[in-house]
Length: 527
Ligand code: 16G
Ligand code: ZN
Image (cartoon, rainbow, N blue to C red):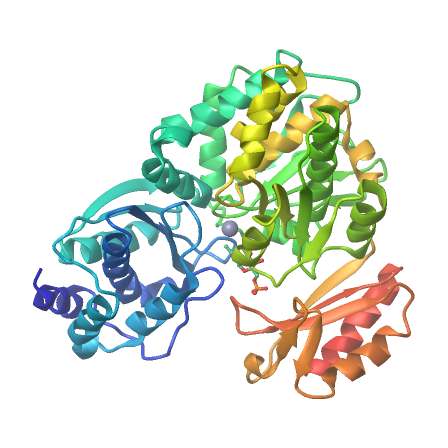
């Protein structure tokens, strides 16, 4: 390997055109696409080194800005087991993208030396992208970064983020997941889903049809691929397919529906209580919604999915008489009513962690069965190896435990997967014979609101206790407490965003009016 090549490539093709420092945050690097070419090239370089560091295991690179607007793009690395990049390497990534082109060669040499990387070994990088128009250009930059260090690169084209995680883990741990191909991904999920349906398309109040809002992103395309391969086991109408003038995430998708608390654009006229689903631009988040007979919009967000899934799995554990510890992980954004329901009704232990999938995932691994969801709809379920063994053993004699194994097959354990999560929810509702009314009536959400506050430096705000308490600037938390004390069932917190240059305010209280007022008052304290 000649590190000169890296420098030459960088200078000729991917010069760094911005000196504004950027940071590998909760979702990797994000920003305006026109400034990302050099970032992508360098991430290709880093993924190659990371693969060598991990003895030639496949490392994934996903190019997407998820729920962000169309002009944005981003990149994140996926570690060998399909998990998020190890945090010590986040720092390495940040340093690498911020050095000048002139320092690049030296800096790469330093990474190699510091981490004892043998550059003569082989290296494998998988790369995929969402359907933004600048993604192909950025994908080429990543691939060139890999090639500059003589690594092997395999391009997957347009895929969802969770598919990329699936390909990486499938390739590194061959037995459990089968081949790292798109076909195998569909096959694994569809086969589990259809076996769980067992020919029963409708049951009780459960109807087989739903509306799917693809956010004009990759989720729409992939849902259409699913439908082609499913034997009509689900009747899905896909809207916001990404054809024509609609822009990714604009007036549609999971983030819009959750934050704005209203339906996406292009909704057809449907019967009240029809199940509708929104995913985000890279299909790792999902929320449900519907309109009632008064045309009122009703949301079933990540908390609702978490409680539905946890309740169902708890029932399975009990009916199969398994000795397994199930736990649920949430963040401060979880609706207070959902937490009460989990603790008091489901009697499932719940923990709260800071925002960001890696925190939730990590905590969930502490249980035999860990269910985690962010209120925004990102989440999945993880099973320990011993839990899987226990369930497999039980399946030899108990038919219910066989269903349990199929449920595990249906889940993408590596990361939240909107389509897999949706198929799981559909399975549970079908088994229970529930419509959305049954689902939403398990508890009553507290009205809640989020605000974005623009401040000079969002990092002056420091939080603790899973972001529920603000420790800096001094005195702010006391002021928040005083305001909150005036509201029945009031709760509020502030935190700096990890993905945007804003401070976020969250508020909930017993009425809508109180919630707006509380959010407003807390917002003023932050400004
Ligand atoms: C990222 C996170 C998501 C989190 C969101 C919060 C991952 C893969 N994604 O999208 O989990 O909810 O950031 O954004 O970790 P914020 O810090 O701007 O509120
Ligand atoms: Zn996403």
